[in-house]
Length: 101
Image (cartoon, rainbow, N blue to C red; front, top):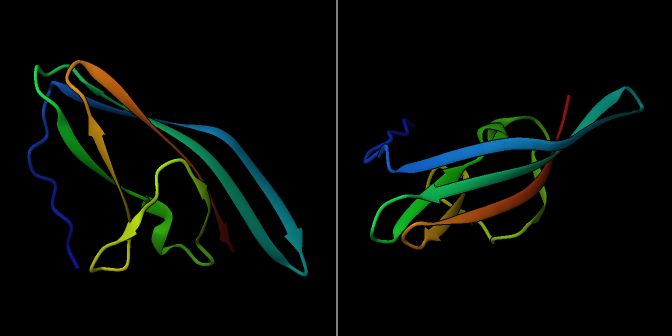
């Protein structure tokens, strides 16, 4: 599947930061936990809806551990978070997931 992005706007910004990343090893398997915070800002005069997709979703052992906004699974099997951002405001998604190597 190919995912295309449409409607990118200079008035809508998305910033993601890693709040915490931890690695552990058990029986030769490395597990990495990511705690992320994504802020979507809307400088437009009207509300916007933004969909966010986890880039790591295809990684081995990917599993969402917790999320501030419930995701849905799209038709490609990827988790998608839909954020409604009011005019001239921000919305925040906090999510933690893990992957294994």
